[in-house]
Image 1: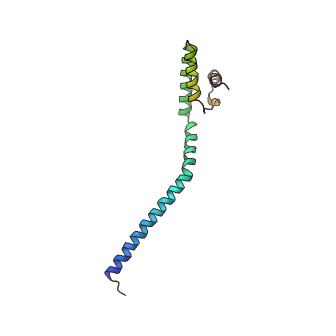
Image 2 (image 1 turned 90 degrees about the vertical axis):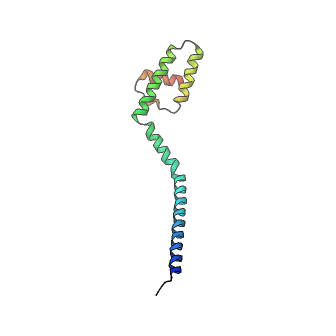
Image 3 (image 1 turned 60 degrees about the horizontal axis):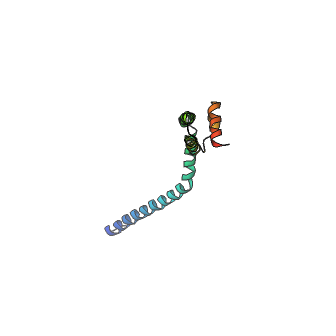
Length: 113
């Protein structure tokens, strides 16, 4: 059974087109997969990051700096500006991670709860 060169060429081109279509379909499937699981993956990454020692230590150092600035502020407007900054930057920070009771109480007082 001899195949002509044209038939072999047609089968080769058809195979390449089929392979290309398969790659497109798999790519679209991958995008759908990422659309569903991507946000969940990023949420987990963020949770892990927020529980790292370096992140927690950095937040505690920043809070200590703000406490020092708040204690040195002379005007009520200056104290309120620092309070608003603390509220914004520590809105979702878990104060139970702060071991120093004075600093933890300061954050709780600044938040108002």
